Length: 101
Picture 1 (cartoon, rainbow, N blue to C red):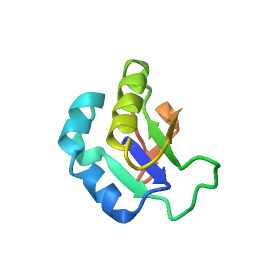
Picture 2 (picture 1 turned 30 degrees about the vertical axis):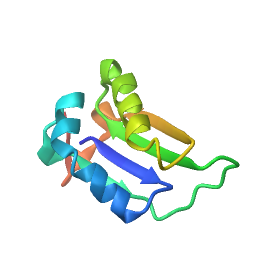
Picture 3 (picture 1 turned 120 degrees about the vertical axis):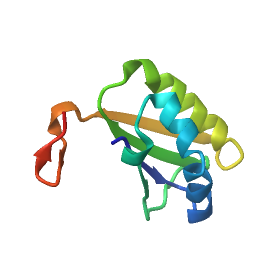
């Protein structure tokens, strides 16, 4: 945890982002062994070229804006718009049948 799901990019760009895993882990205070990257196999239909990112994690209010700005900068040459939607899972996530705390 966190899980970062992205629509509107190709696999190469996801691999490029994944190469930044150590930097991302430090930025959002997450154990890199728990970071999950998901390439959504979907297209984003919008007038502007848009990348849509969903971040599911334990609440980190102080990191949302920092991470959103980082993602916008990372994908600045890929799209006009980078939308990031954060979902706080807190006590709603189970891994292997066990509630994550």
